[in-house]
Structures are given as C-alpha cells and as structure tokens.
Amino acid sequence: MADVRDVLLDLGYKIQDHGREFRMTPLYRDSNNSSVLRVYKDTGWWTDFKENKAGPFEELVRLTLGLSNIEEARAVIVNKYKFERSPRKTSKIEHVKALPKEMLLHLVTDFTYWNNRGISSDTLSVFEGGVRTEGPFKDRYIFPIFNSSKTLIGVTGRDVTGKSPLKWKHLGPKSVWRYPLQINYNIIKDTKQIILIESIGDMLALWEAGIKNAIVMFGLHASRQLLSTIVSLDPDEIIIALNNDGYKGAGNDAAVKLSQTLNKHFDEGVVRIKLPCKNDFGCMDKKEILEWQKS
Image (cartoon, rainbow, N blue to C red; front, side, top):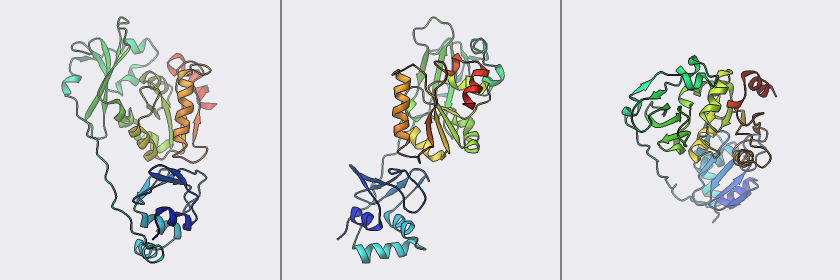
C-alpha cells in the first residue's frame, strides 16, 4: 500500500523532507519555488502558499493530473495506489480578547508631537488616535488597533512628554496585529505590493509621502499570523524596509532572516530588501523617501 510520499514521487514531484511535511515545487502551475507547496505526511493535506489554496490530497492529485473532478482523482488514488489518507487534524483557533472601549476614552485631538516631526494633521486624522489625558496611557499618543470586524484588539501609545524611559507602550497581543490593514487593505490589494516596516513612526512618514501600502511589524520579527496574512494578500512584490542599523546591525540581520522566511512562501523575485537610506523613515524627509521609492 502506497503512502503520501510514494504517490507524490510517482506523480513526478521532487520532494524535500521537513519533519511533518514535504515541500516541493507545484507541477500544476508555473513556479520555480521549491518549497511553496507543502503536503502533510500523515494526511496529505496540502497548501500552496503563493496561490493561497489548500485542500485534501485528492484535490492535489486532480490538479496535478489535470482531471476533471475530484471523484476521478479519488479513483486513481484508491485503484492505482491503494492509498487511504488519515483524517485531517484540526488546529486550535486562536481567540483574541476584545479590549474595553474605555481604552479610547479621555483622548484629545492634539497632533502637536507628530506635527513637530513633520506629520500633518490630515495624515494623523486617518488613524483615529489622540493623546490620552488619564489612565495608564496618560500623556501618550494612542493608536487603536482594530481587526477586520472593527473590534478593538490592541492599543499602542507613544510618549509625547520626552520624560518616559519607555517611548512606546503596547496593550494586547502584538502577534495578531495587522496594522494598519483595517485602513489600507484595498490599497495593498490594488497595488499588489507590501512594504514591511518596524514602527508606526515609519508608517506615518511613508503615508505623509503618499506611500500607503505598508504593514507595521512592531519590531524585527513577523509573527506566524502576520506571515499568513501576507501570503493571503498575494502580493506581486514584498519590500522589506526595516531600520538601517549599519553593517551587521539588528535591523539588517532581521531583514535577511525575514527574506529567507518569506522566500519559502513566494516565487523567486517577489521578496526584496530595500532599507531606508537613513536609520529609519522617520529620519528622512519627503524628498528622500520618494527617492528611496524610485530606487
């Protein structure tokens, strides 16, 4: 009786063994990425991370052989290979707790801090933030983080006094934040391009220059949930623009590691590193940012 590996090899796949799964180049479409298609060894459940497709093993066989329906593929699997797949294992669903709406009380529309850093009031008004006058985020400019259902799942605040040793303060699980996707989702889908950056300050500087397709990572590493979102957006180009910390700096090293991770999910040439010409976009004026964009 054949197993998943036997069937894949017979279909012509050149597989790479990665623990619980096999990785390979899809044979049912043009691709030169040897790990974009992944198949679980035990169930045959597969995912094409470029096409954002997934399904049972029978569907992969159908696509590969060019069969008209899944019943034909099932017949091939049973009659030729004597293969019966195991039931698909279900994964746990991560539930994100909503934050109380009171977190957005006591906000005043004071753009002074960001205006002094070259960010216009028009840009800031897009993100529904303000300076909190009471509570644990007092004297911080608050940016609310919403999910696709407009549920408040996070808050991040920048100290505006210059007195706090902690410039930024966060509340909520950053691993599930996809900021500001609740605002620029359609822009990213239209441009087919994503710019990955470290901070909200970078995002505001880019937005001020008319570049509105960035996603903030809130640090140097992309969470599993954010990677999944990036794949589902199906961009033609991903630009990694983390902070330019100089040769072997933290931002530079993280950019290389992130590109290696993303290249496992996208075809060659989609992902590229293009760091800002200064330490970060907040240090650059509009002219410099537009020159960076053209480079």
